[in-house]
Length: 485
Image (cartoon, rainbow, N blue to C red):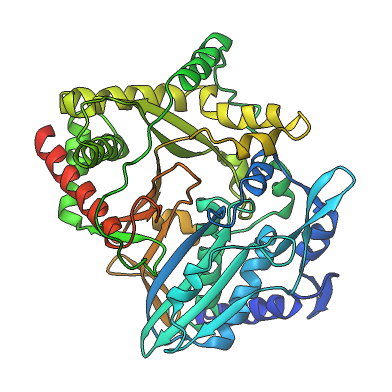
């Protein structure tokens, strides 16, 4: 059988699966039971929430929703019917994104709601930015992902809003990879290379609350744990001073984007190898420097307060390879002050050592362990989330290589993923923030470039002030790179 015939048969099988997605019972297609996933879903759901998911539900607020936005830019000709079929398949492969919250005897549960794939098509009168500005999701009434598509000629933008209770950033990108790969399988011309989808297992969702696998339990130390808790209790992080500049129009887009070109990114990676650190250690030092400089400029104060940066950390292991989109992460909290008075190399290597020691031990799971303990106390999570205590000054999330997080294999064109009739030009998104946190920064590399997105609190950075903060971060990144040469 020719390669074209094999690929066309695969497309027909995928189309048959799509047609069966809305069925809650297995449906016979061409003499086979399709899809087996449907019966697995019935066995897994309703699914109790993990401590982290409960925390995200409890911390969801009207002004600070626990949602995050991701925007795709593509070129090509998008076929709406095939896109809807691919979206249905992707949500079926990632069922938490098609689930509602329901209250049962033993607390909140995820209830799978088949067929509730929510996709909206916008036109010139209702641009895609509008959908991204409305970031609240009521999990008791709608699924955990909202999608809006806007196409003008061959320029396409797709905006997603994900609720953090259902998935983390890596899981969201897995879903996007499934969506693009499924769309590519339905639209690739015969004779052309087609994207491939990996296997997923709905049963793996029962593992999403596991902190480690039995073969690699990290080193645990109560003494070290108590030391971390004492540090966080005594070193309270400062916030960001609001600029006295006049009020400006609020940004319609929920985040500000800056792109570092491939040559500059190569230079950053080279200097990181020279000092035996990771590029993210340089970005972390840069953020501390930017925060200190911003406050010193606005406040004109000689005080040296503590700053705290929260780093989302994936807990995924090989046991999670086939897991659908979900939360499999913890938070690492890093305190620092006087960054501007530190020798740049000493600052970066110090941060590298501290973060590495946390990631290589059970300390990387400390935040989730604390949440589990708090949840065991009736009303504990509600009290924790309603507290006026600031968790951190800023968030720094690095997803790494975007292509790798998409999880699917795509043919490439100049380093960019090709999904049938469209090519992925860029993927942009930013971490959510809570009261007291000034900015959530998300970084990722794609097609040789570093994409940096800033989700700035509009109360601290109204309108164009957010653009100034993003520019300040890039200026400090350039200066830090020079200092490390």
